[in-house]
Amino acid sequence: MNELFKIYKVGHFEAEKIDQSPNNPHQHDFEELIIGIKGQLMHFIDFETQTINAPFISFVSKGKIHRASPKKVEGECDFWVIRFKTEFIPEITFQLYNYYHVQANFRLTTSYAIQRLDTLCRLIYEEYVRQNSELAIIKDLLTALLTVIESERKKVSTTTVNLTNNQNTTFKNFLTILEENFRRPEGVAFYAEKLFMSPKSLNTLTQNILHQSVSELIETRKLIEAKRLLLSTDKSIAEIGFELGYSDKAYFTNVFKKKSGQTPSEFREEMKNMLS
Image 1: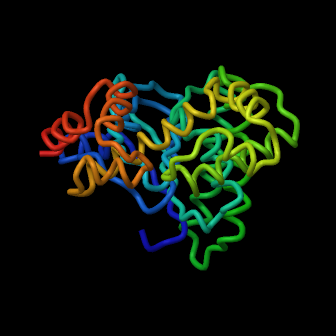
Image 2 (image 1 turned 180 degrees about the horizontal axis):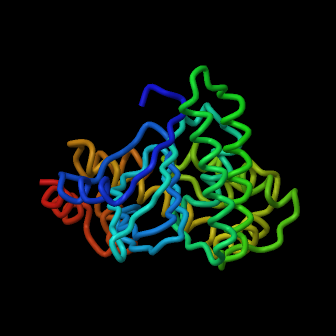
């Protein structure tokens, strides 16, 4: 995508067209937000398929392999799709990654919420299609839209806890450091030291927020990258394992199978068959 920002509608005609065309798992070089007003989304993301009925929110961060298949329910489908480059609104994009990197989809629980979101999307669309549209206005409206979405997410999320500002900042810093270092063979102590805290305190923080230990988050991030490399490159299993900090191929294979239920070779073969 060459534009910084794009918004469009997916109705029942577009849903039928997508359903009848090749729709293989793919990656984007942009962030994508899908707001489902009516219909259903069959979403392949994080290497599993999830089906969610409207009204819903789905966020796909840049680089994630996914396939979104809109479906009609009682003959109707009505989605807003918003795409934007990370640099368009970087401070909000990073928050979205924090919130949705583990769970991409969630259902809205009130008709009032979807009415507000639909209204904001219409305002954004009207500005987007206007001659000499103002990106600054679109950015402010998008920020408001994401604020409303976050308010709704907190109401339904089972992982949301009351966090202090310091805890939020620390968790965001942890994710930043993790993204920079997950390929290295480092454990909890490394990340705790970078954050000037004890391993126990860091583990408590990640358990409170995501119900996962630091070690589990590190392994999850490595696993997602391993799957990406298996799918998008011809590198050997040993090369991929080494790139992710595993010096022993057998150990990497065992960890991969324990977390995903398949060996790296089995996963690669299954995905190749699916894509073909």
